[in-house]
Image (cartoon, rainbow, N blue to C red):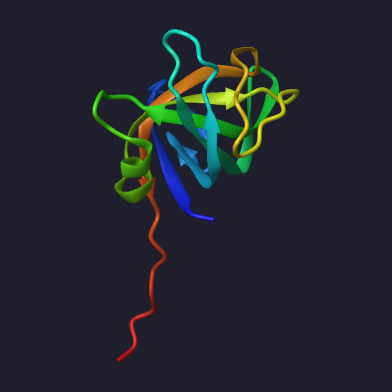
Length: 124
């Protein structure tokens, strides 16, 4: 799995599980949109490495889409970008290749999603 850092821009005072305004996530795959106005065709499905609580509910999965026109999911996976992020509600079933139900998600974050590169040891 590819690992990413989500740097939360809004809400500005977000206290993430990995520090202020920071959530570490793993890319699980892609899910389809609900084929409704104002929804994207596809979203990134992200697993939260250290789940957190929002409105009294555990947040273990997120879905993300590009925030700006012209950005693509593939481009964000490759080099990062600004995304809008929704939490997947605990009772919602979502897996790669499935379509999300708008009632199963809640929009909660705008931020930057950046791939985390594994550090290679310095060998002399």
